[in-house]
Amino acid sequence: MGRSGLFDLERHFAFYGAYHSNPFNILIHTFLVWPLFFTSVLLFHFTPSVYSFPSGFSEHGLEMNFGFVFTVMYALYYVGLDKKAGSLAALLCFVNWVGASVLGGELGFSKSWKVVLIGQLLSWAGQIIGHGVFEKRAPSEKFAEGLLMGPYFVLLELLHFAFGYEPYPGFYKSVNAKIDADIAEWKVAKNQKKLS
Image (cartoon, rainbow, N blue to C red; front, side, top):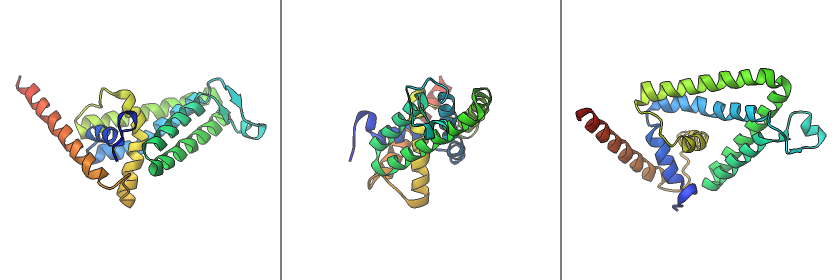
């Protein structure tokens, strides 16, 4: 069932999971990752439109701008990772885009950037606390990969917790083995660094 490269869900999930294994850090991310996506789309709402939808849509702020392109990129990637959970993640991306577009249209830029600033600051502060206090492991240096996988990781964790969902049989067993190996390797390297 394994894919390679960009669509290797097992590798990406294990990579993300190795930096998010503490239950409190996972809980913090569960509540703060999607707001990062939402506030990013809200900010991107104010980029130039390459195409305006018919007037009924445009009146509510729905425009084909970078916010829309950003949403489509995330949505397509998530569907490419796993059709079932990826489709749900794609739907959530578009719900965020519609919500951010409507809010941006109502508030205008002068108020929206304040919402974005507060949302981003609170979300990043929470995640820094999650990593520093609970995980005791800094986020990965692969920042872009973490940003891309964050919303999907949170959703997949929730689906697994609530419904026992796996993209395919044995997914979590394989992923957990990789996560455990990565964490063990990190602890050894951390201890060696202390001794030297």
